[in-house]
Structure formats: C-alpha cells, structure tokens
Image (cartoon, rainbow, N blue to C red; front, top):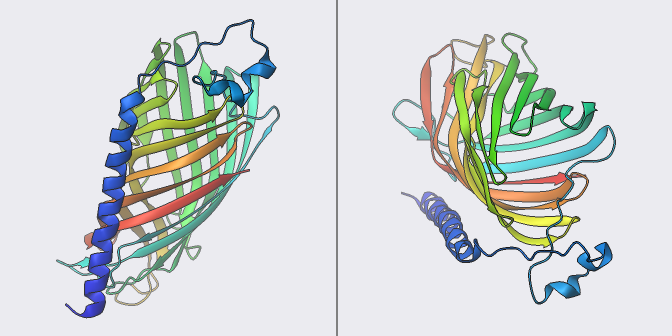
Length: 338
C-alpha cells in the first residue's frame, strides 16, 4: 500500500483502540464505588443549607431531583451536529468495502402540553436535519440528504405501576428532488411496569419505516441501583449511565456507554448510469457502539458529546437490490439544549 493509505490505516487503528479502551477503563474505574449509599438529609435541614457545597466535603451531596422540564408550553430548543469518517477513499463495488464519510447538523424545538395533569402529557417537537455524504466513489449518490417532520410524544400514567408511551414521527426523508416514497412514519409504543422504586420493565414495538427495517420488538428494563447509576437496557438502544457530579436540584454531569442502530432511508433521484433520472430509495446503515458525557441543567437545558465506532456498514439502492459494503468508521457528535 502507498504511504497515504498506510497512514490512514494506522490512524483508524489508533482511533478504534482509543475509543474501545477508553470505554473499558471508564467502566472498570466506576464500578468500585457504585454501591456507595447517598447521604440522607434530615427533614429538619433548611433548603439553603442543602445547597451549600461546603457541607459536601465530608460526604455525598443531598439527593434533590432535577427538573428536566420547564413550567410552560415551550420546552426549549436543541442543536446537534456530528462527523463520521472511515479514513478511506476506496471505491464502492461488489466484493469491495468502499469509503463513505458523513456530516450532519440538526435543529429541534420542543413543546409540552399537559392534558389535565403531568401524568397525561403530550409533547410536540418539530425538527430539520441535513446529512452530507462525501468520499464515495464507484456508485452515484447525492451529496445532501434531508429529514424534516415533527415528533409527537404521549405519556400517560394509568396508576402507580402502569404507564404507556406512544411516539409517532411523520416526516419527509429525501434529497428534495423527488416525492416518491419520501414520506416516512417512525413509531414506538411501550407499556411500562414499575416493579419497584428502582426498577421498571418495558415491552412494546418500534416501527422504523426503512427499506431494511420494518417492525422490531422493543423491550428491556430501567434499573437505578444507586443515584449514581442508571442502567437502561432498552432495545434497540441500550445504555449504561454513571453520574460523575451533582449540584443538587440544579445540574448533573453523566458519563455513558451504549449501542444503537444507525443509518436511515431516503427517497432520491439517481444521477448517471442506466437509472439516470429515476426515483429510488437509498439506505445507509450500520451498528454503533459509543460513549460520551453530558451535562443536564434544570429546565431541560444542557450539552453533551459522544464518540463511537460504527461497524457492519453498508449502502443499498432499493431498485438495484444490491448491498455495497462500507468500511468501519469512527464518529463524534455533540448537542446543545437551550
């Protein structure tokens, strides 16, 4: 291999080792004090003293629940962005693993409407996202892909143990040159059972409305063994969270590791080749493992970032019915809630 290819190969190997070893070191280091009980606050203590950091030097800060909502209809906005690279410029083709880099940015606005009470809540979140593809050769693909729509969220608490969550996201996913098969509907339905104060079980289904994915079961558990740990083993996005610091009732810092299904399907117009000018469906997919850090601030504010590794990547056009392999990649993403 030439010098440039050898350099990209070594850079990718280093990035993969850094991400995976970082996840492992963080998790092992954190487990040593996972079972440390929080300091109990006497009811007679004044609230002003509870927020005095000088009193935490001899123990844990008091546990005061963080309000992750605002007292009004508008719940804030969010900006997201990210970059994914496989460090390769290899061509895509049968029997070959090609290179494809991806960049995206997204903006969201959130509202929350209590339907009588906070136990019966409707959330509405419009969004717009743009994905930029680069480094792809050997097959035609648009440089820009777009997704825009609105996410509808409904949560209802039926009694002390049973609650339901329904999410629907009607959207347009395309390169904005065709409307054929551009409308998509993501859906999620869950029934949650609060087995005890620190453990809940969930069961339901998720509908991706992608060319490669239809309906999948959604199931798992959410376990909070201590205030420092929250284990969300919910498929299809399991995640383990560890709290690193807390300003009681005001802000918290969390580290996390997890996995998810990446990619999406867009309606596009082919350019070049025998299908020039024809409408088609482009699917880019991959499996992700990631780790990161986020700061949560009262009032649904905060920021975060994550890095990860993507494997089992591929690209497919629906009309061709041929799946092209892509090289493994690393990515970094960040978000800001305001």
